[in-house]
Length: 284
Length: 342
Image 1 (cartoon, each protein chain N blue to C red):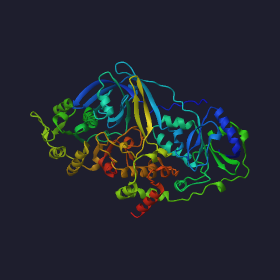
Image 2: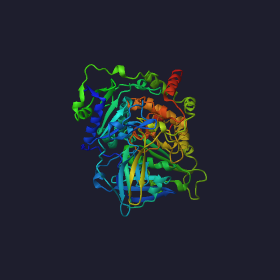
Image 3: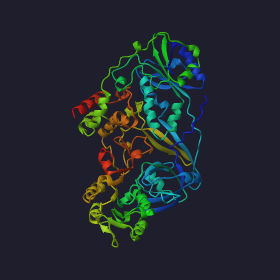
């Protein structure tokens, strides 16, 4: 019996993207620059800072990462990931010219327009700089719209710092205050940054909370000890932003695993203020 | 829209023939040992309507256990291309669902049509006609009336048949899809006269106040002890999710060889520890009590807030199938009480 097939698109079908550039950032950590294989799709594609996507290594499956490049840089998207499981190992084995899948953009965004005219303080730890890099470049590419920009970034060791070239670039800019730190014992003889854990370095750097927004991303332990420091500096929970991660499959509120209570990280997040995070049950 | 007719039981043989001739496949309860399962049937003679409830739900008609979301081929030098064919699921009649199962479609649709429509679910549903049979008996695990349903509830059915004598069904033709089935053999459907369905329906007592439950369980969220006690016996086997007509959670996995592969969507369960496990080893729901809490909260609290309806139709399958006899209704009653007592 014939029934007309409707035109509902397949929401699980990724864009096919060619790897244009591979950067090894740190041991096991890579950045891919991806371009659309279909120019028509490239033409229509837009995203905003904070959104994430599902990246496919065909034959291995899909994995969820944020988009690490800024929407102000057109024509490509970038992602940074650590090789850890089946999909990320599959991705890590790919090279320039290979095709991978990209499904997105999904989720909400950082309210960059609402932040215009404010100071922005970025606090990141380890592999959590990628979700923030998107916002950092977005802010720096529209530099006139924002006041002071402070970037505080820490990793366990010097080798674990990602985007080393960009850190040097930010360090050289007179309109950016960059503070980098590594955990005690993680320094090299020629290390010129700070030595100490992120919360202590934030306290020492003491960015002003006046007319300021803080964006904090990092391992849970770093966040746990950084929040009280920011609070002491006068930052209100509604002015501190983060992006949450939970295991995901679909990215669009159907597969049922990223929810924290009634809140779906994929649909209501991944960007939350700490005023919102405080209301969530401890399931993230 | 709703029209009421009478159809003789022995006319169903003919109706099945006509339905099959029209190119529709028919899924219906078939007896296997002491239980019944939805399977494809070729004649009415294969159908068994003696059971209160089939072991698994009719959900597979619209949401198969495992289905292909896409197929791809590997080319030279790292190239990938899609192997695209139009998605044409079989035109299907599900016969012999109970009213609770028919109701469950709304809960599934609420998820699969949430903001980003899911082609696979919606196209299967569009090609599926539900012919339900009212319940004339119930068992101690049935609780449809506690969650807004009933043994003769019409919601979700295209045709609802209620046995009104040994030889006849009262047929409520509820939708255009239902009318299309009647149109295959209109001579089989007689005028209803004064036949009433209510006297023939099973009596299912209301066991708890679902509106009260919705208010009290969020209060219980942080009461770890309640959830731990309730789930102490839970094996995390996922059987409850696999027999559930509304559970919609799924996994996405690839299967491939050197030539190409397929991306599959398969049923999953929030009862499995792997369900939420992060790559880092962190697991937001790291003990079974949190996973049991997720199951209950999702169906009776989150669903209500996000989808505007309950994620449970009271079929009782989870309680019947649980290998360690965790009884949902008993636990819900306890939770309602706990929340009330603070």
